[in-house]
Image 1 (cartoon, rainbow over the protein chains, first blue to last red):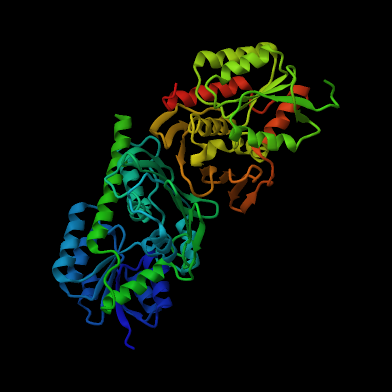
Image 2: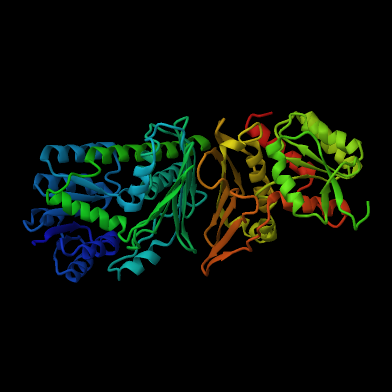
Length: 346
Length: 278
């Protein structure tokens, strides 16, 4: 069976620690063939590890006829241009890392490029594809129709602790943008809070959107230092509390819980970067509990799905329009949180 | 009454479901307490009754040696003040059973947590209430307990702000020495009822769970550091039993109540004001 060629734009931590190990796990179907990174030292080294070609220029990956799937793991401000180029090239599928874009205008461009070209664009949201979450969520009765209380809590150690367990990283390590010093301006605090929503909360927000579809208001928001937030959102009936802090010097904890009148959903995700299987998810009703846990992580499940889509065996579980709606939801919360900070200090 | 004899506990007018847990608790301390009739014994007051504060005053004035109030609901500030004054002037201990802040495992480690409170960035508490427990005090009780828990560790609750409030839940926030405090509650018919608290700082975080699934189900309190997680002792004792023993010991003069009535009244007032219940 011919393997599907994968080209990757960007050879940073996500590529090295997440995508290449996940592709190795699906090596019978997917093969990295071309990696682009402007840093020759990193790009060449990473490409050589998987016997792929290296280019400094992203367009070289897109133009490569052996590349069927383009994985875009570059900085988010170039996502729209690169997705458009991959769609123009008529690739079989595009996997774009989150956030899909940082502005609604760029997200709309991406959706139009996908629609006009017919090239499926899938956003790299491993929790949306986590098989235990998907199973538990589908067992949840009623979609966005009742009073719901959601609690999202993300407490993580330094990213480098996890990436070092997933790869021998080439190039610089990653540190989330630190919050501003106490004497920095409210504008800087607001921007840091916005970035923390689009950098960290965005992992859970598409999941929360399935429970609280929106539009939602930001009821209160605080930036946490070094990196994190404490935010409450709601639509009047439904409320979500979002809390996050990193990098801590303790075991990771990444949970999503939801309660309505008669159900309790509890999902415990493994930390990012490591292929530690699915989350442990449980749905409890008045009749008892059901729980799910699978060997395959959301990363692997998502890549398997991308392969199915590229092979014409499936349609995207999450359409590009749905992904754009997820992004709009996240941007609205990020903007609302930033506005809350500015209003509090004005 | 002699030290060798159990103290007598007299129940006033109560709702059957309120009293059941307390009768179970009393049955587990027969050497200390027993139900009966005695004006100079301990009086049980059902806090769900609108007149509970006045009933505390009546009990004290009638010569009760101690009072236990179960699930106090909203009451006029003047009535609460009168009850506090009556108890103080007669030196009668008045106890309230609080599930989390009165928990023995929590209290045993509270000082250590308090020492580290300045390093915390997040205090996030949520209480899940069973529909069967929804009554006048349904939302007030958890918030009073959360405030008591916070103050036990932080020394203050800060300026409480109501972010959301409905018949089914609330979100209240404050800032305590730079720590973002959130206290919330929701009603659900499923899942583990009771309280959860995350205390998160860079060097240390605590995960606390005060389940309400069975009276004696223990609190699970885990401290996480760079060396891993360390769980506090599991104590299979209901909040009601803990409170009855504490009240017994206070009446006998062996020890003080972990939460005196005047302080409880202050938390009760704070919760009532922020929820708009007073």
